[in-house]
Image (cartoon, rainbow, N blue to C red):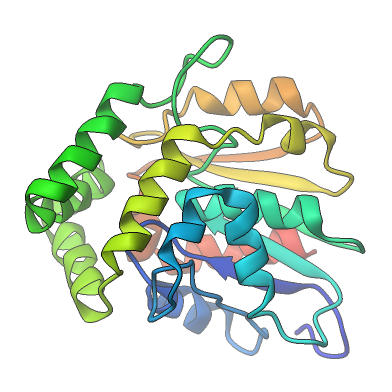
Length: 248
């Protein structure tokens, strides 16, 4: 347990989803106190355009944190990992950071080859304008590809998006953050314990990115497991175990 100001997981969801996606992990964590903020333009929050800048998004999430939070354990999945890293860079005090299928930079570039092609994210933006539902279906399929039961996971992801739809401004802002965000310097220089969880069959964050993270932070603790970008949703006990290890 983490009563009395101990390490407190702050779970930050990914693009297109809401804090509700963490419910299975919260259940697996049992009595552990958990904080689940919503990204701008997601989970009923306004100002989706703030999500285009990870620093501005981090400030928006800070406004949702409880006053008695003294030792956060930032846990960010996918786009949430980028914002978690921005939050950690702003925090003054004891903290820990854990990325889940996330990196400080999601698009490839000089010195950072193991990431998405920038043209792919540009294609997401164009499809969002043309047919949001089609993009959500494709994104859910990418998140589920490589899972033990991809069709079932894809349906679960689509149900999660439909249950609490993100604002169009938040979706646009999130794609801009994924395309332009680069927090490698923050990852390398953060004065706190850092960890990362990678899935071997992830279609959005290549497993090889783990080597790049380790090169920037030789002290980082890395977990590599089978599955897809969102396989943890079907196996929340395993991710809860990861969070407990980071807390410990």
